[in-house]
Image (cartoon, rainbow, N blue to C red; front, side, top):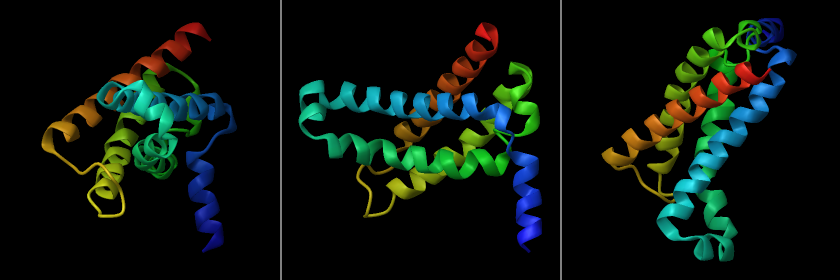
Length: 139
């Protein structure tokens, strides 16, 4: 069993994709931080750092679970934007679903309204696609 798990992650994790992983996490945190600040104001967020952490945490957790499982950091991801962007978008579908599932529980603040489902999905798609495209253009 341990061998099967190791083989699974060997096919989905490539050290050359580490810069993508760091950038992806930064982009996800930045996008949802910006949304939180936009809706609540900088003064509120600055005086309540736990609020910001609680807002972005479900999306970071979702990404940390989904991205390796769906191959966002697989060997091909580090080769080109043509490979990396679709892997990120596919991973975001699951990551966003995980995050929204967490937000639907009474343990996480935020809730799940249809408008937010569409916005979080779109913001993640656009942000990750732009970041990964830019990464390969500048590399």
